[in-house]
Length: 161
Ligand code: ADP
Image (cartoon, rainbow, N blue to C red; front, top):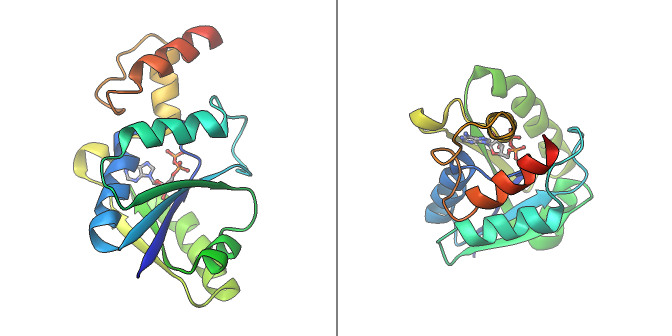
């Protein structure tokens, strides 16, 4: 059984993430969406449990699991027998950081390959931070996030404003 991991902060999950997760699920027998709780990014808008619940509601493929981890990604991969770490690439600007991470992960754990899937054209500009910004300023986020979670994001952003 070939297992892959799609790691990220998913704060919140967007249609760009869902596209990558579901394409990975077509290639691998099992895909774990790993909500990393030790992200270096600034304070998150949603708790890890909320982020996991949003992903649970949005993913349709039966071979996708959701988990969280606050250690080294490669340790999770080793403990769970994953052969690949799947990341989405939006633009060249993503590449340098992702390439560096892929090389470090490969040297820490050579048994897992990092694989990059290109973002769909319409998702190239999409990020969780962009969704939060648009939402906080009262814009329509429905084209960017799974339909089942848009309302929850609106409610939280209203509280932040
Ligand atoms: P963000 O960069 O939106 O804060 P994450 O840290 O949660 O996202 O990213 C998790 C993974 O999803 C990364 O591999 C990232 O490159 C990928 N990703 C993020 N947004 C998109 C998108 N719009 N299209 C494709 N992949 C994406």
